[in-house]
Image (tube, rainbow over all chains, first blue to last red; front, side, top):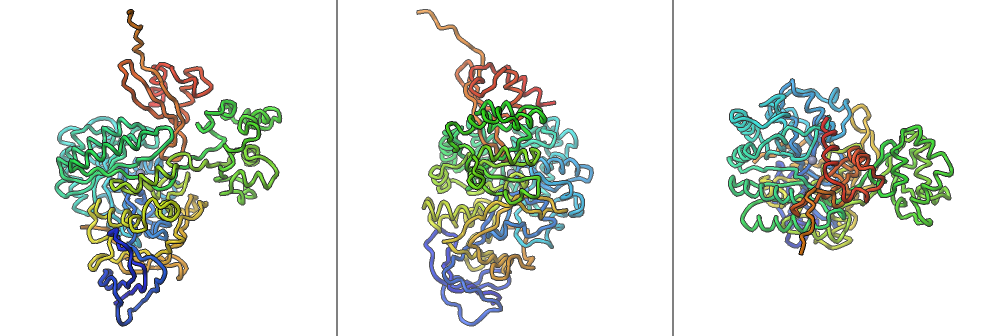
Amino acid sequence: MDLIIRNGRIVDGTGLPAYQGDIGIRDGRIVSVGGRIPGTATEEIDAAGRVVAPGFIDPHTHFDVQLLWDGQARPALEHGITTVVPGNCSLSLAPLKVEHRPRLVGMFQQIEEMPDAAFDGAFEWTWESFADYLTALRSKLAVNVAPLAGHSVIRLWVMGDAANERAANADEIAGMQELLRQCLEAGAVGLSTSFVDVDERLQPVPSRYAHAEEIDALAAVLGEYGRMLQVVPEFYATDITLARVDQLAELSLKHQIPTTFSPLFDSAANPDNISRVMARVEEQMARGARVWPQVQTRPIDISFTFEVASLLFAGTPGWYRTMRLPRDEKIAALRDPERLARLLEEAEPGGNTDRFRKMRVRAVARREDDGLVGRSLGDIAAERDSTPARVMVDIALANDLDASFVATDLGHNDPARVGALLAHPMVHIGASDGGAHIQSFATYGDTGYLFSRFVRERHDLTLEAAVKKITADTARIWGIAGRGLLQPGFAADITVFDPDVIDRGDEVVAHDMPEAGMRYVRGSRGIYTVVVNGAVAWSAAAGGYTEARQGQVVTR
Amino acid sequence: MPAEPHDATPRIERALVAPGHDGSAELLLRIRYGDGSSDSVTLDAAAAERLLDQCGATALEQLVGQPWRRLLNVLEQSGD
Ligand SMILES: [Zn+2]
């Protein structure tokens, strides 16, 4: 055997109770599960006291670009994620004609906030077709990739500029069908489309110009392969989301395909959303349709700066008015002791600091303030014998307004409601958006947070149920064959972790994008070893990432 | 019994700040139509500012009851 993981607590992905045993691996596959394996292997890992689980699968990412220079999809891999699905939300890097590259870069920058450098020098564009994109990826991968083809780029290929202008005619629809067929033949696991996203000019992305017949025609091609349709619905409007659930259900039944929509999240601004959408999902699932809502584990953080008037201040008119002033007047207002005193009284009425105390400093321009990043305003206020709102103003002024702050837990943050939702058998845990929004917040560590918050702390799910949700369920929902379970014959994608420690780390600033571009990341806690196709790709004992590049493009 | 005068103009019924999925705050508006049906619209920070200006409002509560024509003007501007 190449690798034996001994004495672990095996949580095999089925949802059945954990049990003690060894796992044997040869040629990238699991050959033995449970029982004591005699003899020795080339490499052995002692997993006593730790959980041995299938590698986690992240079904909603935008790692498309990053994978070209970072086949480890950092930091996803160190969180135990062994398979990522890129190409969500109608955008993939292929199929793409040379002349359409600038258009796609603009769309990606809008959603991923990637600097130009990420596209200019960091990789070579060697492909137009989906098959050639996968070839460009293959040799670099440390994680497995189950790629979606994006509806917007398929549309761009076939219709050119008209993709952003109008509905398609019959010939164009036939052209898109043929192109999608080529993507699926090359290894795409499905098609993604969006009803809400915008490009860098804030215009609708091409997929939004499609009429229902076009989506139906593409779903028919998905039906030939039994592949997934992923959509971004109008998640902010329950009535429209319900109509999308119905539309997806009809497509699922007619073409016998799985469908998934993301995001679905809880918000105090729209408290009936979840119950209404889930009731409709249950109704459609009972008919035999496959309509999987993706729900994220992490609360939604909202960031803001003093440069623009964030709606976070709309509830405090004095602040909102001040934030809307021209830059110089704004600075003058904040420096004026009398006006500031009035603002502070509005922000912290009667000395109540609830509103700003838990907000954290996200980024600062001045090097000497670097130490403030990540700290709460309450914390800094205590240190400076000040108040959170005053400290926020001080930091903003000291940085010539070039400082940003984050209000944590503003949505999807009622643990009881989110916990119940995550445990729902018809909820697909996902929607991490890994690799996107990189300069706004960290999209990593949602799996660690699932275990720390909803398994360990709240008991909304058992350990076994949580593992199943992000391994076997994901593989089944997406039709990813031979992964997601610890079972002989299955790919040896394995995550070893401590169930008492596993968590997401703190959000920190990293300068690890091409040309030292910044992004927010989170490291992992409690993960010991991550095995991808039989090779140790990340190991706490070995100091982190290894040289292993055994990742595959996942095909049937 | 005399019939109540019927107001058929769609109006903003509720205005709330809600999280967008890209990490910024958005304004979630609920519109009530004359026939009793309703719909939701979200605006980003810039569009929300224009709407407040259009309505001469300084606080969100002042948006409630405003005719949706004002909102249409704002949405048309953001299409430029
Ligand atoms: Zn997305």
